[in-house]
Every structure is written in C-alpha cells, then in structure tokens.
Amino acid sequence: MGVIELRDVTVDFDSTKALDRINIRAEPGEMLSLIGPNGAGKTTALRVMAGLLEPTKGEIFYNNERLSGADLIKLRKRSTLVFQKPAVFSTSVFKNVAYGLRVRDVSESEIEKRVKDALKQVELYTLKERFARNLSGGEQRRLCLAMGIVTEPEILYLDEPTAYLDSESTQIVEAVLKELNKEKRTTIVISTHNIMQAENLTRRAILIQNGTVQRTGLTSEILRDQLETLVFDDTTRNIFSGSAEFTNGLHSGMRLASIKLNDDVSIDAITDRDGKVTVRIPPEDIVVSLGSVLSSARNTLKGRVSDISLEDAMALLTVDVGVNLVAQITRSSLENLRVALDDEVDVTFKASSVRVY
Amino acid sequence: MSLESEIVEITLRALSISGLAALVAAGIGLPIGVVLGMYKFRGRDAVTGVFRALMSMPTVALGLLLYLAFSRAGPLGFLELLYTPLALIIGQAILVIPIMISITSETIVSVDPSIRELSRTLGADERAAAASVLRESLGGVVLALSASFSRAISELGVALMLGGNIQGLTRILTTSIALETTRGEIALGLGLTVILLVLMVVFNLMLNQAEKRVRWWLWE
Image 1 (cartoon, rainbow over the protein chains, first blue to last red):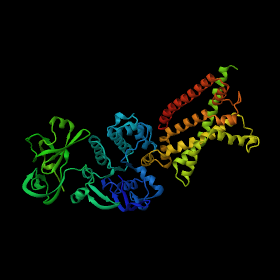
Image 2: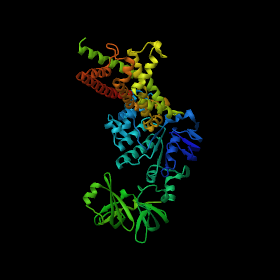
Image 3: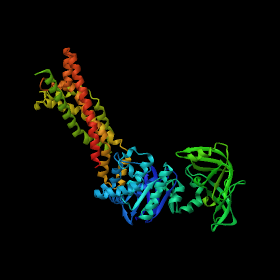
Image 4: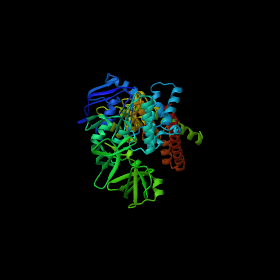
C-alpha cells in the first residue's frame, strides 16, 4: 500500500500547459480512476505520479515524503506504470517479465517463481518462451500487466488498461486488478475515458479536463451528476434521459420505478430516485429473440433491427424500440437467430440491469 | 608460388585487412554513434549530417588525400606507412567509420522511446535504461558492422592508392580483379569476383547467426 499525492502540479510542454496546478491524492489500498476525454492530461498526470516526468511546478509526495529530481527513482522502484500502447522488449515473454526483478537483483529461483505466478495470473504462462513481439495486441497488453505486477509495486498505475482490448482480455485484466487490490491491498490508479470501466472498477474518481481537475468524488456521484457530459466515445451505448416515477412496487426488497424515456417507451428499473434521471442499459444484458419469450425479466420491448455490426467474436444489433437500443450478442447467436435488417424482434432485460443515475 | 596458393593468400590478406579495418571502425564509430543517438546536444544534427555525407565519400578521393598525407613529403610521411598493409587498414577504417557512426546513431534514435520509459518505470536507473535501448539497437549495430566490412572489402580506390597492389604484400581481391582484367585475364578476374561475393555473403550469414546468439545472451 502506498500513498501518492500531487500538490499544485503544473506541467508545461514548450508553450502548452499539459497540467495546470492539479491536486491528486490516492489513498493507501484504494482504486482510483482519472476520467476525462483524450488529451485531458490523464496520461501526463500518471507519468508524474509514477516518477517518469518531473513537473514544471508543484510537489510530489510519496508516503508523505516530498520527492524531487534524483529521488524519483525511489518512486519508480515502488510503483509501476503500465502504458496504454504496449511496449515490450525484443526477447521472450519470460525475460520481459523477469526484467523488473533483475534490475532489483532478485535471486534467479525467486525470479522463476514470481514470473511463473504473474504469467499465470494474466493467463500467458503457456506462451512464456514465445518472442514477445509476436504476441497479439491483447496478449501484449496482458504481458505488460504481468511485467507491472511481478515486482509487487505498492502503487500500480494503468493508462487506459483495456482500450482496444477484446472482451476476453478485458475481463482478464479487470479480474487481475480487482484481485490485486483486494488480496495485496495494492493502490491502483487507472486513467480511462471509458466511464463504465471507471464505474465498474473504482469507488472514487477524479475528472480531468483541459489539464485541470474539474471534480473529485465518488465515481457513482460523478456519473449521476454528469453522465451525459462524460460520454467521451461511442463505446458507451444505451444512455438515455428520462423521468422516473415510483410504481408502488418492490422488487427483491428494492424500490421499483417506471422510467419514461419518451412518449412511447417506458421501462422498469430498481432505483430510489424520482424525477429526472439518466439511465444506462448495458448492451451485454439485453436478450434478443424472435417472438416473445417467457421470462422473469420485467422489460420486454418490440422493435425492428436497424443496424448490425460485427466486432471480433461479438455482434452489435441496434433495435428501434422507440429509442435505439444496442444489444451485444455473440456471432454464433446471431447466426442461430438468423436475424436480418428490418426484422421484428423482442428485446428483454431485467429491471436490475438498468443503471439509474 | 602456384596460382591456387596465391589466390588463397590474396583472399586471406583481403579478409584480415578489411576485417581489422571494420573492427577499428567499430571501436571508434560505435561509441560516437551511441553518443549521437542517445544524447541531444547543440549541433548534433550538423555532426550527424557531416557523417552521413562522408558515407558516400569516393574511395579514390579518400585514397588520394591519404596518399598525400602518407607520402614521403606529406605530414605523416615520417611514419613510412605508404604501400604497407597497415596503410590499407587505416585507409579502409577511415572510409567506413562514417558508415558505422551513421547507422548506429540512426538505429538508436529510431528505437521506440517507450523502451526507455518502460525500463525506467520497471525500476531501472538511467544507466540500465540506456542499456535497454542499446540492446534494442543490436540489429542496427550488426547491420553497421556488416555494411562496414562489405564496403571495406569491396573498395578499390584506397587499396590501389595506399597499397600499390604489391604482390605478396598489399595485393588483395579487388586490386587483383582490376589487374587481371587489364591484363585480359577475364576468367581469372571473374573467379576472383566470385570469391569476393561468396566471402561477403558468408560473412553476413555468419553475422546474422551471431546476432541471434548475442541477443539471447544480452537478455540473460
């Protein structure tokens, strides 16, 4: 567990201010996200925190000790930054992971054991003898994560840890981070423009825009208040504004509300909020069927397929149910359904799947 | 001396003179290339540009300049190096040093900057991070060695001007090819050319194999 704090940090690149008097503090053992659009300054903030970049002005504190200049090596010995663009050495997978241990003069038997554990965690152990640069993009990202965690850093920084990753690699990376934080109490700071990832992984978030901290607080509160302004890319789907009304119903002991998205479309959701709300329906929670199916889910809507797009092993179906709902299904499911553009389908999802902010 | 043994002697002489020239060039050019590639300083672009221009130095022009320097009346005449194998080694080394420097520095500059950052964030100090960059540059260093040796063994101007093509002393493959061709011994000239080409191919294949072993060893 480590505590890192930036106080009034400014970073100038030539005439551009990348960071402008920002204050960030990551508490011991917490998972913190830096959210913001591309170019906001998240990566620069991470580089400063990881001791790779000395700020133009301001102070860096590590475990409440002020560090600068030559001291930054101390920071680098105790924390690691996993870059967004995977960088690997031109040698085997094993030797890449061993690098951080070799510069710390760890014994060969210990290296053997720790590298094996790290590679097993990211599910790359079977590829340990492979030339690292011959791995796929997703595997290289996982390798970089293994290189980062093998040294057992007190703080782990990750720059857009799952950007451009397939869903399998994303799940592996997120699981490793959660386990690391839970089991070893490693402080983890991630930068992401994927606000759903921030919500999924971190309790607290810092919103950075134009090199300044706009807001610090609970991730759920930031999302609740500013969700629509926080959608930085098109990977965040099914976000709607609506009006919530209590329905006098309880669902598993929770309060059930009807949320009107427009004059024609209302959905059920579990929330204690009334009035104006923003909702998100995760595409992976939506079931698509030809004709209605009997299920316990409270929301079933009829619509026509208006778009089908393929992404790796997955397919995204956009269904016009009065609003455009995107459903994520596997390619094999798409082939089994034999659904085509303009076909009428039913979409089904649970009230508990609807996130209300 | 039989023709066969003379050809063997000429081949071995060419190999040793050009091999030594390439080694001397590596000893001088590699450190300069590393400094130019690793460190930013005022005037670096100008220095790099000069070495690049010198890569295409005409061998006769260099031969002439060195001939004037080494001749009895020249500033280095007292060394009495003219028409000796040592003069050939010096001349060929000077010819290929710019190749060694330019390819080495360019290779280092083009190593992905994230390699240095990666080493640093994994706990390496600046020296160890620089060593990582050098390890990543190995392919370019091998290429520089290969190009230097190939240029040295295949050049004619310096060998003729400084060596004089003296039988049993400074006669090497390229000067022999030129001599036999002017004598009308085309078949012999062609035979020597084949030997020269085979030498270059074999040397480069061996260098490639060596690179793989060295790369593996460097990461141990």
